[in-house]
Length: 168
Image 1 (tube, rainbow, N blue to C red):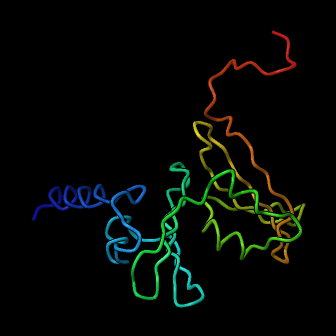
Image 2 (image 1 turned 90 degrees about the vertical axis):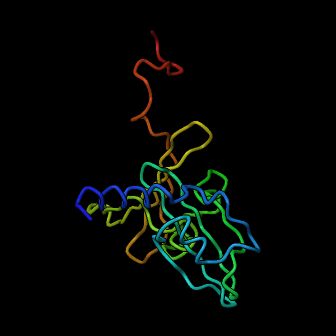
């Protein structure tokens, strides 16, 4: 098989992965069917009772994190998109931990450190209906959430938007 044929075959296989898991049926689809349809998970966590969570990241620009919960019998329990404004509300500065954020939202799309603040930051881009947004979570060195910033992603806004209080 020639080099171009191999590349074409790889592109076709990659194109078969489902972006959002459509076609999967909770209570019926198996873990192997989930993986075959959605691709390799970005993260896998063992849960109580023998269940596991598989995180399928579409970050940074896909702006979604799908989590498939697989039962101890290897069957899909549920599949949900975790990056929503409603889900962000459970993050509590001073209480939530890095482990909590990683366990609920999965691995961030981007991460870094603010040396002067002595804080690590994780970034998750997501959609709120048609609105592109950026969730930034800051952690102190002890792994506790110190600040949660949910902002509009202005990089995608057309120039010349009207801003309240600004004279034109």
